[in-house]
Image 1 (cartoon, rainbow, N blue to C red):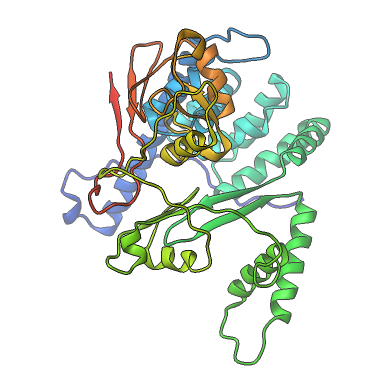
Image 2: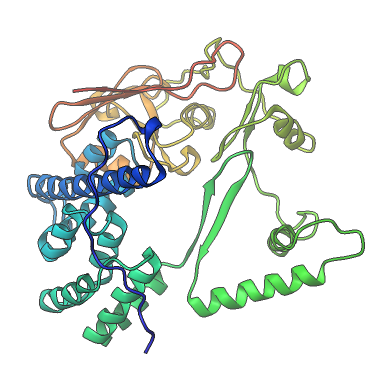
Length: 410
């Protein structure tokens, strides 16, 4: 059996009542530990408040565990995605209703939120009694010296408590395999893949082997750079010739002409440098988009079904599903009427917008209201009467340096 390196709970010293600029290194550590403990205390309060909020938003349809629109209320209040809000609500409910000792340890600052979530998630398939036993055994040995060691301890005890539940979690986790892309900084993105442990190890080994074989005399690339290049060649073909993938790059014509260095925008990523935009435009098919001086796209149509031109206009204007926090691209969303066509709503840029399939249904099922007071400006009003107004992101323009805003009215 693997021996555990333990790190028991201990009290922190109260921080010295002097300016941080005058503190010793030891006193700085006291401030850090005390602030971290207080952060855990407030994380526990948030969990309790989220659970109570969920109780006040019971589901109105079968198969649901929360009212339509409830997660959007939390999402817009905190400035996070609806999916992230839903995850926080579910984790909070597990802590409050199933693991009172864990919630107490979090409130006392003995463990942090990540450790509390690990206990909640990894014991979710256990019976309440087994979950309490695992909680008791894990917490009795302290927080461990790292999050990874703490999670290992929880996994070890959950497998011992119910091997069948561990097998069910493994089967469920395998169904969630997927590939994700997350924008980073400086024109880069992070591509990650969720695979079974054995498949991931085999894939990484294969990429690493090819990367080491790819080194030639004079090759100055690091092993990491060669791994990345090997992966791109495997998927897109050498020279990226296997597939013709459409990626929208928006950039002012004056930037393409080299008259200025205003940033462009890569669809699904965000702002990129002028140099990067010019590189991408070198071998590209160009499409002209007319904007006003503020960077907003111009077009109007009154047809019942959005014409291809109007649909393109809306997707280029909105870029993403317009519900604040939703990251579904407009090109993967539906062109939705703000005022229903059956209620005499016209099919125009002033009465349509991009909403993903989920949020299109959400508008109909929840007590939220959606208005579009001016073309491209959306106001969402929650059941509590709180309003959240968003403007479409302006395209890069010398005349529109101000970033888009989210206005919250309580």
